[in-house]
Structures are given as C-alpha cells and as structure tokens.
Amino acid sequence: MTRSGIAQAALLLALAALGAWAAGASAQRVLVGTWNAANFGSTSDVQSRAEVVGKFDVLALQEVLSEHAMRNLIVELEMQSALQTGSRRHWNYLLSPAVGSGGFQERYAFVYCTDRVSLVAEGPQGLYPEAAEGDFVREPFFATFRAGLFDFTLVTVHIIWGNASAQRTTECQRLVSVWNWVQALDPVENDVILLGDFNRDRPTHSAFAPLRALGISALLTARGTRTTLGAKNSGGYWYDNLWTDLQYTRSEWTGDVGVGIPGDNTYGCPCSEARRGVSDHCPAWAVFSTLADDDPPDP
Figure 1 (spheres, one colour):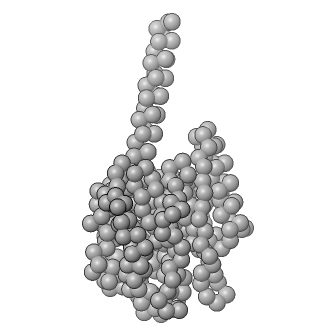
Figure 2 (cartoon, one colour):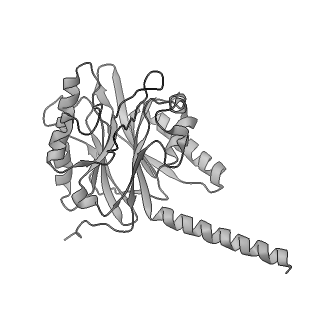
Figure 3 (tube, helix red, strand yellow):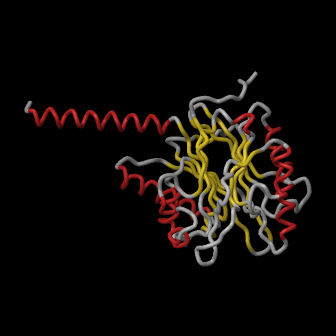
C-alpha cells in the first residue's frame, strides 16, 4: 500500500472511531423536550415540524388536532433521517384522547425515537382523572418511557389560556394533585417529569407555589428566559418548562437545559425563523443520563 493509501486508511479508521465514540456518547444521554406545536392538524406544515421534532429523543407535543397529522409526522421524520444521515431513525407516538371544551378540542402526543427510547406499556399511562369535573379544561396526559437504564414518567399539560389570569393560576395550583396522583400509581418510580405549556410566566410565579412546596423544581431557571414569541418576534413569555423532584432525578439530570434546539440557533427563541417555522412557541428541553437509575429495585 502506498503512503497516501496508508494515510487515507488511517484517516478512515480515525473517523470511524470518532463516529463510534459520538454514537456511544449519544447513547449515554436522552434529550427530553416539550413543544406547543400550534394547531397541528392534517393540513399543517409537517416538514418544518419534523425538522424540529427530529432533533429530540422524546418530545411532548401540545395542540395536536388529529391523528392523521401524527401519522404524517412519523413518515416525514423517517424520511428526513434517511436523507440527512443515510440511516433511517425509527419513530412512534402515543396520542391522548381529545381534551378541551367548546368548539376547540386538541390532543397531547408523545413522539419518540424508538431506536433511543421505548414506551413502558406496563407503566403509568393515561389521562389524569379529575377530582371534580372542570378542574382542568384539558386534563394532563402521562406515560412511562425507558432510555437505557433510565425509566421515567412524563406528565404533559396545556394550561387553559382564557381571559382571566386567575383561572390559569388555579389550574397550575392544582398540578400538585396531579403530581401526587401519578406518583402514587407507582411508588417505586420516582422519576416523574412534568412538562408542557403552563401559560404562566416564570417558575417563580405564585401559581407554582404548591409544586415548589412539595419539593418539585423547575429545570429551566435562567433569568430572562422566553419560550414564546411576541406578535413581531419580540417580547414573549416564559410559558414552557420542565419540573421534577431533584431528590430523585439529580443523578440522572445532567444539568443541561435550554430553549430551542441544542446546538442549533435556527429555532432559537425568540427569532423570526421560529415563527415562520410554524409555532409561536419554542421547544424547552433537558438532558438526562441513561447510564443509571436511582429508583429502588422492585421488591
């Protein structure tokens, strides 16, 4: 073999090793996010949404209007992954029943890359059964997933918007009952993550006082954070977040958290690209280790 051939072979081996290292590093972490996908229906722009969703391992979606939209999204996700990497990633979703009142109803969805995350069918899953009818205009939806050794229950919410801010505050205050109810379904599984569109600005708002009193912490805490866009791509509010009990998830949460897409400013928030990219919300996300699970073993 010539010197140039040896050098080329060495370079290929080095690139292969680098690729294997990167794949291994990726397998050690799971990117969990939440995104209000803004009236995502069967005729909506699926390509732009897939460009966002495809960057995550598991993503809670709000404002899904039809199952047909989700089927279109899965097809587009797999097509984009094959075109971009030459290796098709496989995707699936879990869709809630319709929630809401009046003339507008929506669904929640968890969309996840099955190469990275699996749905735990025997784990807690379903809509939260309200203690009294009308406690929530849109009842929270939850399901349990596993990535590596890390198993976790996601609870997603879309708090009422409404004209009265007091109604939004009341729904947020009732989330402590949702947390306790989901936690009680499996006392051994302590890695519960509450995420979604809370429609209350800042995690220090009094609406979240019951959660904070229980020891539940917001992961997105940087001062000045905005997860929504104003009418002219300025202003905006801090409506989206992820909450968990760090007493149990501190060893799994890597400390990485943010808005938009990690390492990609295209959908950073606020920016005009995000509004053109179909939603006035940006994803909020956190990264967790998949190498260990600190929950006690089943008896």
